[in-house]
Structures are given as structure tokens and as C-alpha cells.
Image (tube, rainbow, N blue to C red; front, side, top):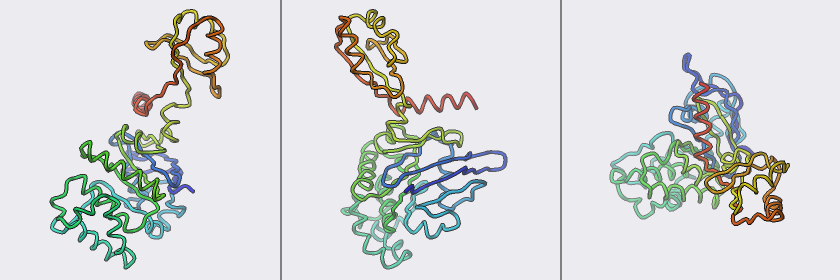
Length: 307
């Protein structure tokens, strides 16, 4: 089941379109990155999902329930942090959670201890929140979400302002929530490296539009399969490979040769065989691993030109 689905979702502020006909599908049980530059429409979409602002057009659902028609029912199993989480600074972390649990009902109070343990705050839970670092506040915000035992967590730029240690702690916590507890985490961010390290799937958004979505590997590769070939005679290698149907493009590079394989073809073994049979000594045959950052910059730069 997709825990989030939108179809043609649009939000306009006068003549400005902040979210533009977004079709989004977030599968259950994964960490999903909603990736885009600042001002791309990420927070606006999250606010529509949570019913904090109305959509201009389109439809959406959370946990299979239409929103806003069944918003209250859906949000019972959704936890969310939009922008910075707010707390009563004069109270301790545990006391803040007790206030929230009292509003949620009797089933929430027994979850306070496990929630603090899960986010790594059990040893600091009885200190006043005013003494917490930004990273601790973010983790306390997640603990507050866990009081609802959510199937889905929606986090808006959760690592903003964190130092490298805090980012690493937050990343490990997200992976535990997904892998050990089977929850789905929808995480909006402009930090490409963190999305690539934290998430299984992602969507790239720019100018309010979903540009592409899929697994992290699919987004980074853009469906292309490339090989780096190191050999003793690049000129002969290019001549041997000329006309081979498994290769779409072959060119020299700093590494030796870079080959783009034809779609649907696993040509590495065939390339090696052809070159060796022609007397070319191959000392390197390595697939190219493109980063999500490369793909992101390629997409958003192109869209900026078109716009």
C-alpha cells in the first residue's frame, strides 16, 4: 500500500503556483526523501497533506484514507514535525511528553518511556528542555510523534541546523524506525547527501513540480548503465568496440574509456571478451556509480533554464 498518494495536487497563492499538479506515491515501510531546493514547494505540500492549508486542485490520501474528507481518522496514525518543533522550555523532556500524552488519551502515556529510549533521550529526559541542543529538540519532537504509535512520520527539514554529529544520530534513528519498527518516514530536505544516505526512495521537486521519483539508485543512474574501462591501447579498444550493438556511446576519459551501455543490456562481460580477443589488455572494468547530487543538479539546472 502507498501511505501517501496525490494526484494533480495543486496549490496557488494568487497568481503564484507553489505546488503544480503533483502526482506522488510513497510506498509503505521505507524512508522516502522529498528532495528539492529551498522554495521548491516542499513545505506547502506537507501542509496540504496534514490539512494545515487547503489544496486548490487535485486529490490526496494518507494511509489509504482521503484527505481532507477523513483527515482526523488518518492523522491518528500519523506523526509530523513541520519546521522547528516547539516545547515548554521550563518543563523537562519527559514532562513535555506527559502534557501531549494527556491530550491524546490513556493509551499514549505508557509510550513515553519507550519513545524517549528510541530517540536516545532516556538519560536526559528529566532535564529542562531549555538546556537541550537543537539536535535533542529534534529528537524530542520525534519522540512526541511516537506517542501516537504512527505508521507514518512526516518530517520537514529535520536536520536543518544540526552539526555533523547530530545529523549522523538523526540518520541512524530514522533507519531504525524504518528497519526495526516497520514505520514509513517521509522526509523533506534540500540536503542531497543526507537523503542519499538515509532514504530508500525519493522524489525530486523543483518549481513546485515533481521532476522524477523512484529508488535512490534509479534516480542517480537515470536508467543509464556506464562502464569505465582501463586498458593498454585505448585507440585499438575504441576501434574494436565500434559497431558493437551493446554500446550506445564510447569515448575517452581521464580514467581510460567510458562506455554507455545500450538499455536493457548487461554488456560488461561482452566488452571484456571482445577486447581480450583483440589483444587489448584490460586492467580495469568498473561500473560508474553516479551520485544523487549529480543527477539533482542536472535536473534542477535544466528546469531553471526552461523556466
